[in-house]
Length: 113
Length: 112
Image 1 (cartoon, each protein chain N blue to C red):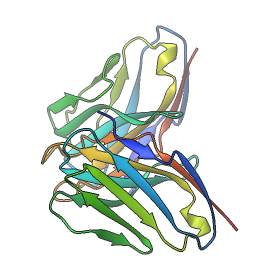
Image 2 (cartoon, each protein chain N blue to C red):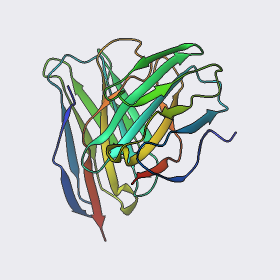
Image 3 (cartoon, helix red, strand yellow):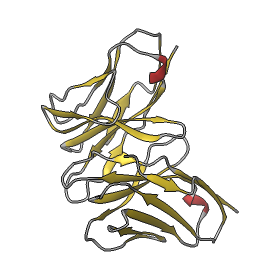
């Protein structure tokens, strides 16, 4: 099993550009989440999903869109990149009840200039 | 709504003990603990559920005081491999399925 994979590993965008961060898991997990990590801020939840076709907002959803058409994939779209979106982005999938243990992908380091 | 962790950073010598605390202003259903090494992804350590027992993982254990809305992570006889940043994640409701709110992290450094 590859676990949770994320592409790309690094990305540089110009302000106003759009892009999609890819996330895939091969563990048949129903639950998936996107987090951003900034120095001193910990991990902040952007969007999450409890199954194909079901998504919901987290703490910091503005500027990001998600969709979940399959169990395996959970892409995160930046609509119009801003310097404030410079961060490390982690995707995670969860094993579900009772522990909801989350497996994190390796992360995508995004810089917006 | 973000839980507050203390201390923010701690430096230990090998073999020493440490306690990391996580406090919430809201009633909690569960508390999750993760460790992240520099440049890597967070890794799950344990979860404590409301009404559950204290958990243990090797020489790392944790408790959950539901009334005080607090959890503590205990690291005993620390090893070099324990170095990293520890995060608590809180879950307000049953069956949120990964909708965790994380604290800001506690950086732990273990020196030889």
